[in-house]
Image 1: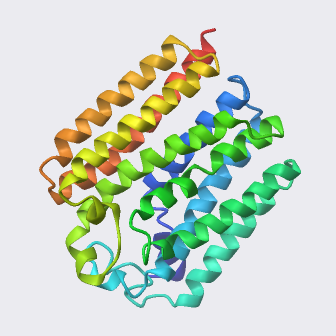
Image 2: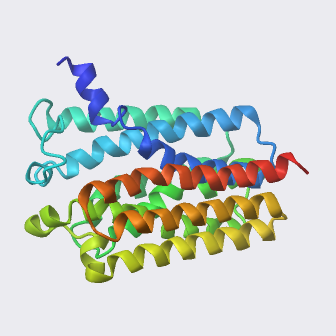
Length: 284
């Protein structure tokens, strides 16, 4: 396998679910911040930047976890873990992608650039939180949702309180879906000493996931209503709630494949929320 193909796998370009889980909250924020009519240039910058930063995060995550991933069934054949590429290559790929992402936001205002630095710090330090933080998924939620305050900053040159509440909602959502993901690897993580929410919640893992879904959707609903969104948006939240209930049917048995399917299916929950936001603005 040539290097480009290995780098392609390193940044999970073959698995776009991570990009989508970052992209949906960013799109909600862009639509809300702009009253439903985001500037095309800003939209393209954020879509491309999201894809690049997620890819950069995957590379640095694999570098940080290179000694752990070899003991996990799902990750022991990754390019870095299997020795097909070197550690310095993963760091180089992460740095190049982050740099290109920063170049993209140069046309935007100073506040957005400042927030991008904070976003980079959060993304780069997340992999190390699994060493000591009992629920690293909460920190992941900040990393995955930092496009929210950045979107408001880019559009309004300020970050209103509602943006931080939306970020909090994203934290709850990330804890929900990444706990489902962590339930897949729980046995391996226990052996190697990695901390995850699935381990911390223990036998209350399913209940915790559903409570986090509920908190995320409740905050989203209040924020949207505060911003003037009404029944199309409420319908989107209702569809998202139905999807969350479907996930309960998948994870309640704690079977690996079903939990992984629930995690991946969160793309549709994010899409439902975005559809509600976009349609509500479109039909005014």
